[in-house]
Length: 298
Image (cartoon, rainbow, N blue to C red):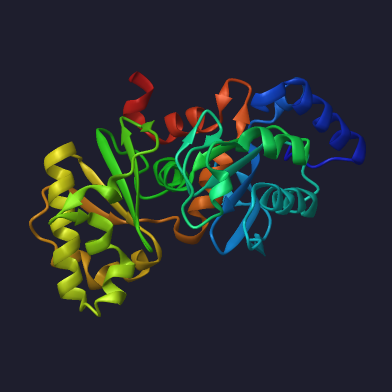
């Protein structure tokens, strides 16, 4: 069952989500939905989504992208999320990424989106607008979930740190397959300033750094994170991961393995779907355990 059904099913979804109030957690018929979820990835310039097979991490339909409304006020963004649900005639659980610290479904910061998001009950807003059970997760955490469940970190034990290099540096930390949410390691101080000011992809472009020069900055940052966390694996994500052969071999001082992300452009959508509400909480708990051997005994 992939969550698609008739208009009657959609009305059921509205009633069930509303009946569960603030949480938007699944009730009734949604308890049977365990293998598919709709993933929606909210970014500063675009909002994209697709249904996901949670057992394989593959999109079951071609993804759809809608430009992020400007200004990106909560109700305007929620309306785009509703449009995506309707585009796929979706009536099952929905997972949604957001570029912010997310605590109990509330967005507590706002990166590249309207400041009205700060303190918003995003989970409740999306559930009310779509009439479906929804969950909201930090965007970097979602990318990490995708890599641990189906990508470059699948089967990895111990401490794993995903770092996404883009406008800033996003981070997702896992220990034995368990997510430590809302880390903001891009703001670790490096040479008197936020690390992302020196080592992000944007910093490379802004300062016109060669691959060798930028790799030196990234390596310095990884060595600092290694000193703090002693990870066994770094996963390097973001658009720059497509060119990993140009800079990863230049970093020779890092003890931990350093590998490029595997999920790439689908990481946000797949991670969002893994965060969708299931019968026993977010679906990622079951699927990350399946993908990470040591977590079963954690």
